[in-house]
Image 1 (cartoon, one colour):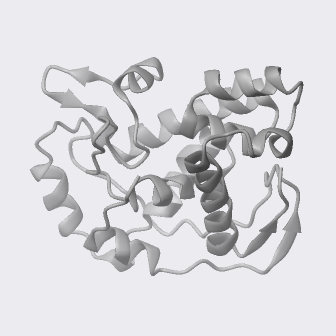
Image 2 (image 1 turned 180 degrees about the vertical axis):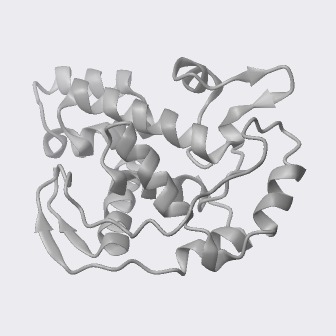
Length: 213
């Protein structure tokens, strides 16, 4: 999808990432992590479609004092997912928690309603927790963990996050495969591009080299 940038997102992305260039496997479980400078908080963590209160809260916190990426990584870590996977949100939404797609996906991690509710996000009664950065990050981390447990590969998990686990499951069965490389060219071009952009972004932001799955 075409990501929408925001002043807040641009400010976060310009903060930079410390660390050295490292070699690592496709699991990238031990990527160097950004220092945890602060926390991303709002007085009301239940965000409705009217996100005025959240926007005002963000606007009142100087970018230099707000480590959104650090907070998202903390959430991923607590959920048992590799913290570096938070960069999926850059590909999905340019880190814009208000992002909406024509297909109906919402939030930084672009959840469709069915998947959002499957992982505990409320979408009813004037509330849409897909707009809550912390709650949507937790749901995304849990979803990625489920995908990794099924497919045993982060490349396949990321592909399934984009195109759906059913599609990946069918491709693996059809080609009697268990790895991403074997089915890569059989996936939709958009998914191939998505996986490449996700891992290229992780490599660039974390300053690491990631081997192909």
